[in-house]
Image (cartoon, rainbow, N blue to C red; front, side):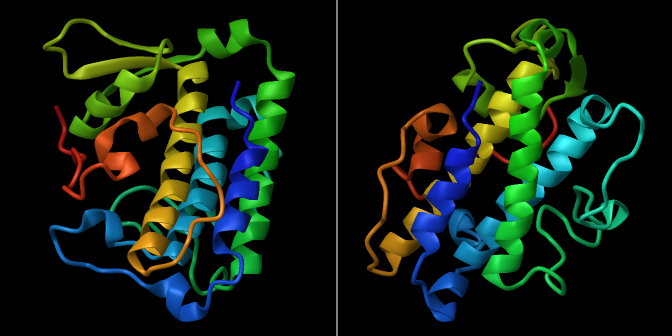
Length: 219
């Protein structure tokens, strides 16, 4: 299973010593999607993923008695453009890097507990079927197992919790790579050599191309 603590180490290494201007550099041009989020926002999104994904997908395993902690307002941190904090943490509460990192570490602790405490057979038995998107169709090609569609034309994708846990790891890893790309664009050196695994095997996420990748249009 993924070694999630690497994500914290890599994020901290890449943002160490960055000024506020360097942390907040971004470009919202339509053709530069990978630059829409600054380094600071990338870190906030990784923390959001670690918290929200884990609570939503595996909260029943981590807190079987329903005693779910509330480090953030869950009702305000939902996915979708019409929600208050879509894919990032509340910037009024979590703007400074130490505050964002504290939330990232908490979510990573949850993910680590999940993969260390739950047997693999259980993770593979926890399946869901969803209507896929162009993004999903693209990135699931990096998974050796854990997801399937009924046929090549199917708009629905079935995936298990093992596959989900790898996908969220690859998702977070891809945003660490985006931090590196933003630094390189500013003429700054990267701090570490990332493993080119998961989404990073795909040209849109490593940076072999600056073209926008597949979006969230439903299949």
